Image (cartoon, rainbow, N blue to C red; front, side):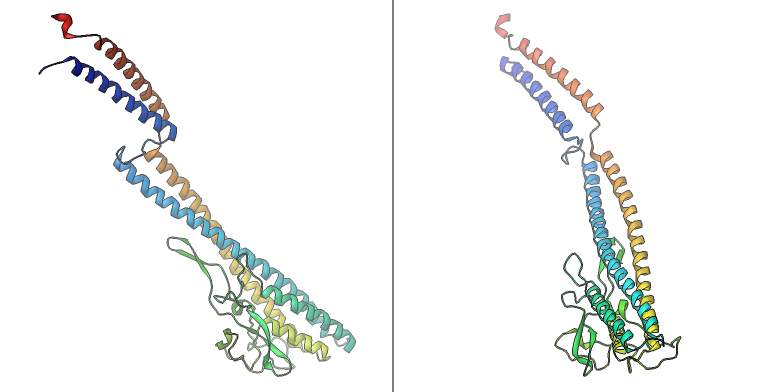
Length: 336
């Protein structure tokens, strides 16, 4: 093997370049805080890091979904709270209106307040969420779920009909966990008028309501029902009419109390769902924390080790530079 002057200098230069590359790599790692920046650094660790990153991103999306579902349920619970408070006031009015000591004038004053509360109930039952969708319309979220149709029910009074459907919005909050984050208006605001009353009925209302109601009138252009639906609005409307006509009906109290029970039952289910969301979020927070710990172990840099390695590389570079300084002064002609 022939050793020439250029060859010896090339070896020294390559040694310096190699040490500079190692130092540059160490500096980049310390700047980023990552031990594994490219697959070539540690292929198994990089694969593990990619899997963990995907798992963390998926769980973070589930956490976002939990927040969205909690927001929808909290808004619904707020609307139902308002409905419940209004119904409790109507219950007081109904009990008062059934008092035999009241005259027609007294009951007309009750009618005035009942109709105001009716409008308040209608606004709450047609409330929108923060996305601008009607909360109690099921999947029919762009059409006002409860409206007064003059052609429905009584020919002279009309009837409040439900134009939504019976579906519930669902949000996936885990790989195998889907949460119902809404309640349709028929599930929340319709009562069973066919049950045996606790007070003797003076009148029967609605006249005849099938046990299972099929609604072809979800479409506003469809033919409305001929029998008033047993929803809360019609209950209150009927109560106000009884007060206006000075014909108190003990069943008004029964219906309003059933409506209160129905709303409270739905609120109980909302509370259970909110509790489940809280538990799921706690699990997700812990899971993400654990996964980030595993990710840190797989790819993050040990600064103590990196600084020690960098100092060794710096020393090696200085030695290579000093060696080159001496080698470049040598020549075979010095020995001729």
